[in-house]
Image (cartoon, rainbow, N blue to C red; front, side, top):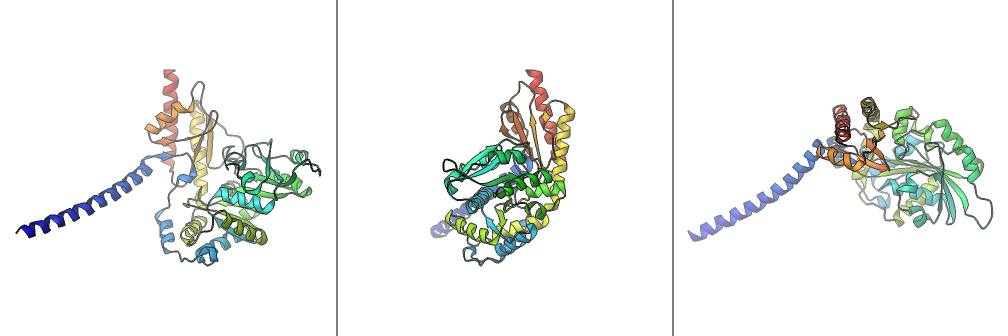
Length: 384
């Protein structure tokens, strides 16, 4: 009898153990799912999670070793992207920062100089990587909301003198992050690139959100990319893939970029699981970007109508809204209230708040977000 009780007790302990493990795992899942549902997260379009259909595509992806060039899904993604942007070749990379830096690496030599907008992502948010990886100097230039005039480019060229770095590359960013997702006008970009090419410069496009520029302007990816030698294109922002970016350009440059991707630790093995998400995003999610843009416009209009916050509305917008608070309010004051009511926003500069819309934010949530901001601002002003 004692032995039977001991066995029953042992079985009971084992059952309890696995029940507790199940509870922990499912409680974590429940919390993650419900935090995603309850929170309207407008800090960035990088906060999306893969849809069930995207997860299924990842699960079913045929795999191989991409470092050997044998992952069929990665190869398909690279071929698909190259065709889409009309470049000789494309390369799958882990992040947008790595994509930009690989392109700068293959376009420059140590001691060269890169011209770019003073508000460029490469200048502000990439950890001085051009200096570390490519050993190049950045020359940040004044711009008209991201557009660098031909005259500014020509005036910034270094003379052929050993005292100076060699001016080698012009970088443009489209859409422009720090200018609130503005779409750079196509003809203005063409003029900038033309001035650079007239003086022998290579041209790179930081196209992290070029898909949004295409959706807003009805200009094809191939038309935009034809202006540039190299381009970087994110899959993990508005398109909603969990990881990854593409770079594209001449085959010889992409071969060199592949070597530098390996040097920088970006060689991935069975990366088809991630590439499958990118393929799904390119095929199924680009058509959703227009809805994101309409929600952003709805949010900006609601703030404008309330007359409390001041949205920056100049230029062709996309999926972002940057707005300023009325004085004397500061971001920290509304951030607390917004978080308590399930809304997340981002501060991108002194007095400038950003809201970014993506395919997992609905029209109803957009209206709720605007109402929360307007209500909190009104309450704070009343109490001030």
